[in-house]
Amino acid sequence: LARRLESGDRVLAIDPGDKGWLTETPEIFRISPASLDALEKNRAGALISADLEKKYGWKIADLIPLLSPATPQMDGADHWTFKVVGTYTLHELGGSGGDMVVINNTYLDEARSQDKGTVQHFHVVATDPRRALAVADAIDHEFANSENETRTESYRENAQRQMQSIGDLDFAI
Image (tube, rainbow, N blue to C red; front, side, top):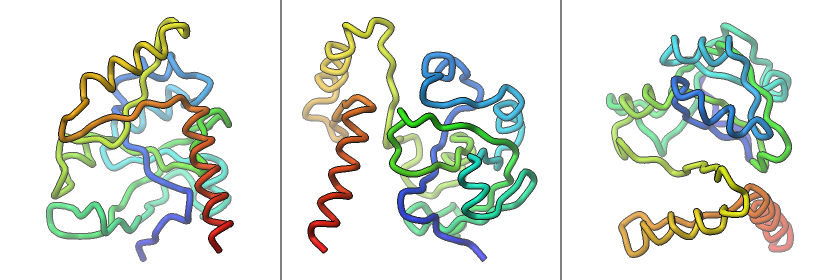
């Protein structure tokens, strides 16, 4: 049976062939070369963390069917089956507020029925931290008044916003 991930857990689609971002952000993700190569070779592969292994009882070579009505496949199916091919470590600075199943973006983009060629997030690392705000402003300026405006924020701001939304939800209840 396909399962929906628990609250806070999500799927992150990456380009496993582009290894440059891993060297730029080692404080966020740690993926072994073997796991990254396995993801690149298996289009329907997935990487999971030790926390996800414990939470869902998954292990390497398991097939995990995930329910995603918001992202249907070309045939209309609302579930996706991935094969666990490796693991990763998410550092606390990632600020995800949960855990992630890491998948191959090329497979996702080719198999989904809508929003092809689009993404929800870009992660950008400024080579000079003193220029980070200027880089963020330039990105937002480039997309201002477009169909897909951007809102840049640091990992810390993202984590704070997510924690605040949890706090707001608790207060509303």
